[in-house]
Image: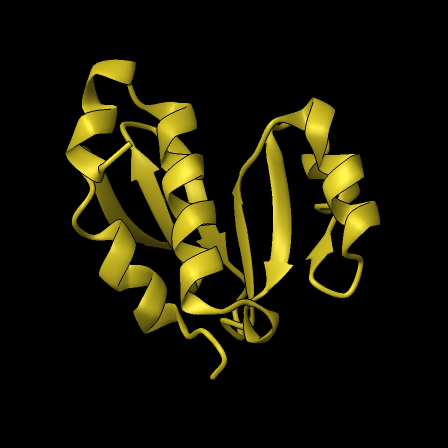
Length: 113
């Protein structure tokens, strides 16, 4: 069954310091002023924090699932995924890893990391 934005919310909403905002009709999750998770307007693609140095390998390994961000966003630690090609378990792992990139390490145990 394809993942939906509500499945992602179920994971992201409970994470310490994370909160949801709407910016230009797009759902985004922030920690402080840092956007660590976002959706396109159609809510079919999820962008998330991901190490720049690892994203090319991720996209090349599964180009039907992952894609590079828009050229203007390549300077950020960011990659995108098609929601309908993720299962809940994989989405949860990606969301938790993205959140861990933007919060202090002392918070990781609160998410089971």
